[in-house]
Length: 251
Image (cartoon, rainbow, N blue to C red; front, side):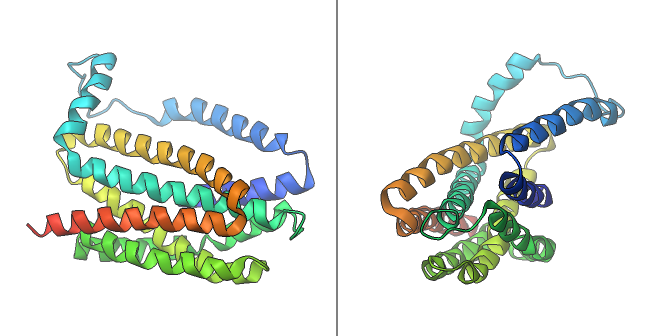
């Protein structure tokens, strides 16, 4: 999943710079069409049983799971905020570097996303570390590291090279916060895991959408410092929630 996100941002940056930006959406539509053809062919009913509940009732059951699994919902909220930070940051990087004042092309933004793939090299080992430490405690450590990367962003306002250290740090920490959040749902009863993950991912992308809105607004009203201030606020909320969950996990 992380690799797909990184590749998509790299390709969209290059395509947006050297061709018409509409090709990004055309390619996305073609990839989704291909997925809709391939997915039914690789899905199997083997070793599964027919559900005793129809699909509308299955969707309604999600509301009951929200009330029954508050800790998973807190994890989903944390990841929603984390994903909002991710979207707001990369929107700001794109708007800032391609502004008239800085003057870089969209391809540079794509190349920076390729650099952020450094997170792929560490996600597995940090995931095993989170397994040993426990997801709540590991998430708190990562949440407390994240503001360090945000502070470093202040120095990246004039030249893209200064963005490399904070991008590297945030690209390592951010995905593993997501991994620790998923752990809290995947340790629940197998009968409800899939629906819990549906709620988790739904809240995650709701956060991403709100991050897109808030990030654009912050850049419009406060430029680069305004976005960093927004990210610091979101990070502070994540730290508070992560601390609360880590404290509760001790009992």
